[in-house]
Image (cartoon, rainbow, N blue to C red; front, side, top):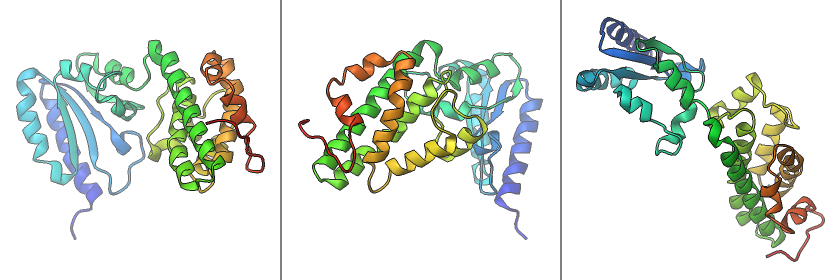
Length: 265
């Protein structure tokens, strides 16, 4: 009987780890992806990263590439490259959540875990600006979706609304100590094991609102999100972001499917 994807990948990662432990040129090793977060299935590869000495990069990249068919997806960095990877304002910032809950299996310099932990959050100095921008993005998409609903264009309303939940989640996770919004496959799991602090919903209730905001009639769910986010945002010092919307904000807060306020373009 052929080996399963899981057993083949596990054997290949065990060989990689043993080789890395025996090579003093390997400065760091970690396991990421679903396996690093304890969410693996039998189909999960071993997504991992290595930090190696400058003169060992080519050899390690070749060795790991040869094991890709066995379920190894390894990124190989020098320490300088890894320090720069997924910088907050850089092109790989999208990958920062992948470092949440990741533990270094090898950390010969004592710096690898600290670098992983830094990538796994919003930089403290960036939290306020990021949260304000996310809140404004949410209000903008809710406004557009509600206007389209007012005008009887259901498809346009859904398209506009589809971009709103991620912005709301960005805001909610950011104000909870600079947490990163999880990737969609981890969202429910993250809310269950580490609930958001100070929000007016349980994780299940928040997911239900997000689901409704992505449904056939999203405007009521967006109005409910906005209604609850408004006092929360003000309490966290983001009132100016809301007030910048002027008369549009009370128009949105008064929105209902049975009473569509008019007069906003």
